[in-house]
Length: 80
Image (cartoon, rainbow, N blue to C red; front, side, top):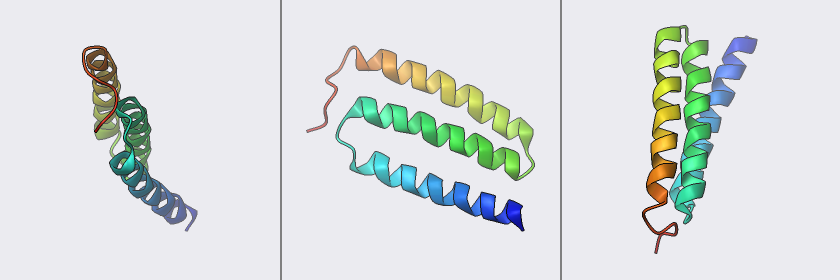
């Protein structure tokens, strides 16, 4: 029963993070919030019993966050 509560909280947290990304105007903040989304997705995949997918998400989430931050040096940080 406690596992179901934790899984439900993780899914609600994923929805909350998605809404935060959608309403944010700062692209750097979106990138940082996206990394939190990726971390929460890793925990969710691990709780559902697929550690291979969780590991892949961790690697891809880390690399994409690094690339997004590097790309932000070249563009304007704020959405208009």
